[in-house]
Image (cartoon, rainbow, N blue to C red; front, top):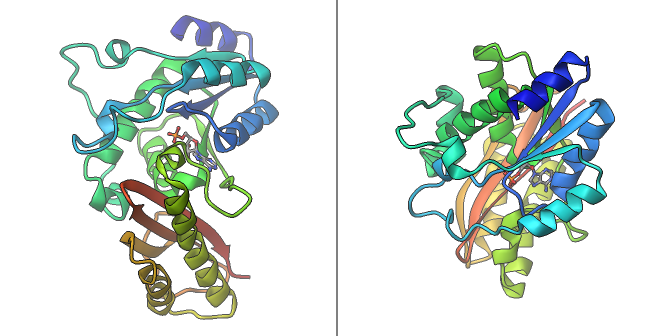
Length: 275
Ligand code: AMP
């Protein structure tokens, strides 16, 4: 990968990297499309990264289908697929980690304490292998994108981070590789999360400026679905991911939600911009 990327860079071409854990869906494909639009060469990496999963989480059973992924990537005319082995990324004796402090602590960081350390470490390794000019991430994992932007700024990576909008199923469920875990009944219940987010957006657009009131309303909607176990709801500034004390016109916010539906943990969010 190093020598391929060096050759591409020497020829003056722009490299776009789309890091994924595979089991590709339309959400991943939207990032690939954006990369192909903005870059000369698109590299898609597929690596299910063990260091971002806690021992109790789903690393072993995370869905994988490299054959199908490769077929899709061929159809999309992706230039390079980078599928490193576990041993290549973390050879025995591996000991270096990248940790972004404050922004990794709240929300996802509270419920998955080692998660972002694993993410920033592997993304850092992928950046060093691929040496991209641009890297593409989904707003679906809004905090992850914010953490990576902070890492890129702090560690002076010369890489532009592009965040692409959430791709949803027709009924509003945010696409995710983990949606395959949901039974038909759980899948219907999972829609409650998006319903709560949309209601929150409506409240904010109707000039409800108190985040706690909006959050309270979301909790009521989600609470009505007894089988959903809420991890958090929150309203944060898009830049810096700090909790909003007050919703102000002219600013941008993410309405966040994370919950478990049965054994499946889902996250979702919505960007709101008050003019
Ligand atoms: P993953 O394979 O789940 O690690 O995701 C790889 C990238 O795809 C991440 O940057 C995700 O945020 C992004 N992604 C996942 N689901 C979606 C979606 N529904 N819409 C847009 N981007 C997504």
